[in-house]
Image 1 (cartoon, rainbow, N blue to C red):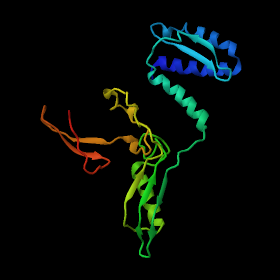
Image 2: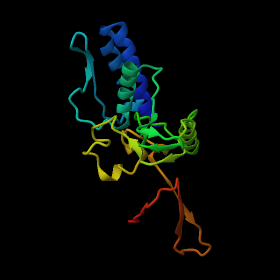
Image 3: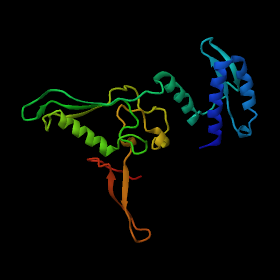
Image 4: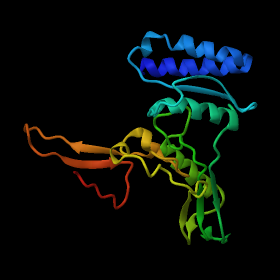
Length: 224
């Protein structure tokens, strides 16, 4: 991780602590931080507000125009912690509409209702069900409800969010990166798929795509 980002994260944490203790110490903390060797060649700006009193309690270069980049994650993380709480858990729902016949046929729909959970079916996060295990769990619950045939649709409901999943002003060359995956109502398998290539033994020979994981029907790949 970038040491300057670490320094900024530590600074923001200390600033929040200082604000909670005593507003008068904020400017001193900012002045001391500005002398760090990590900032010797850096451009930075700080503006700390007491939202209760609606006044600035410390600043340095508050009007300078900067690109916040990943340092903004510190602010959103603190906000999520404050609004949602440290014990918040996403809840995705699996339910059905219609009626189940005596023969186990559902005349209606199976609905998977997303909650915006970024860890759903993730292979990158610990202590969560994998993509394959998640499908098995859903299948098991459907059978447990007495459904063995569906005369309807399988619906993925991602309506929990109704805004742009990705900011429309982002540059196109950023959208292929992991940090631009978007805030979707349903995120699955980290919103990615793996492309597996078939190796060629001859140097310079064209390779071909063997398969993709997970399997996505009718997926078309355009190589530019």
